Amino acid sequence: PPDIVERINQLEAKYEAMGQDLRSYLDGLLYDDFLTYWDYINLDVLLNLQHPITPFKDEMVFIIYHQITELYFKLTINALKEITEPETAVDATVFTKYLQRVNSYFDALIKSFEIMVAGMDKEQFLKFRMSLLPASGFQSAQYRLIEIYATDLDYLISPVARHLVAQDATLPQKYEFLYWKQGANELATGKKTLTLRQFEQKYNPLFLETAQKYAQCNIWQTYLKLPETERNHAPLTEQLRLFDHNANVLWPLMHFKSAVRYLQREPKEIAATGGTNWQKYLPPKNQGIIFFPDLWTEEEKLDWGKKAQMEVLAALMPHRQG
Image (spheres, rainbow, N blue to C red):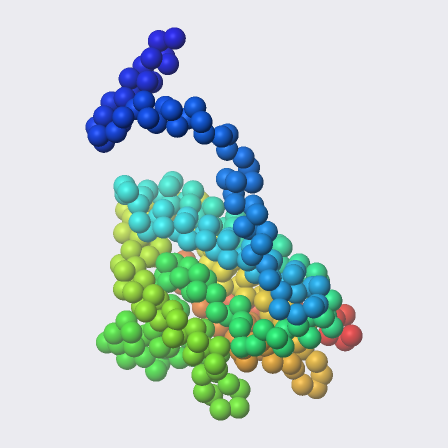
C-alpha cells in the first residue's frame, strides 16, 4: 500500500541521515518479541523494592505508602518543570493545565493518607518504628525540591525567623533558615538531630544548586513575569492558591493527624522517628509557610491552617481519648 511505502521511505531517510542501514533494523523487528505490560513497567523489579527490616506485617504498608508518595512527588516535579523549564513560553492556559496536574497528585496523596492514619495496627507501628531510627519521612529530598521549584527562599523561612535574616543575605545564608531545618532540632538542646545532619550532608549541594538555578524562574517568579492579563486569569490564580493550600495546609495536616494518632500519649508525647519536633513542626499555623502570599488576603494569612487543624483534631478526639 502507498502509505506503507511512504513510511518505509521516511524510515530509510531517517536512518540514512544517521549513517545506519534500514535493512538491519527491519531484521531486528522481525526477530524482536512483542512488548508486554510487565516488562514495560518493570513490574518484577517494582514488586521487589519492598524490604521490611522487622517481622511486623504492617511495616509493608508503611514502606509501600512512602514509595507511592515519592512516585507522586516525581510526577509533581515533572509537571512543575513543564512550567519552569518550558521549550516555549508558557501562557496562562498552559500554566493552569500543569498546576491542575500538580493539584490532582496532591489530592490523591491527601485522600490516600488515611492508609497511614488508620491502615496500620498502632501497636505494630510503635514497635517497628524503633528499627527505622534515625530515618524519617522528613528526609524526602523530592518534597524539598518541590518547595524550591514553587517559590522564593524568602517564603520558605518561617515568619518567626525572618527577622533573623539580613536584608542583604545571600542565598546560602537564607537557606540556613528554611523552616524545615527548625523542625529537626533536639527538643532539649536545640542542636541538629542526626536525621537533619544526615539529610544536609547528602542533599545540601543539590538543594543549593537548585535554589540558585530557580531563583528567577520558580513557579512564583514565572507567574510574576506573565503579562497582567495572564496573571489575572482566574483559573490560574485558583490553581496557584489550591497548590499553596494543598502543600502547606492539607499535606502537613495529614502528617500531623498521623502523628497524633500514633505518637500522642498523655501526659507525654512519643518522639517522632528521627527526633523531629512534630508538635511544633507539623501544624501549618505554626509553620506559617505560604508559597504565594500575594494571592491571599491578610485575614486568610492570619488564619492560615487554623480551621483545618481544628477539624482534624476534632475528628481525632476518639483516638486521643483512647
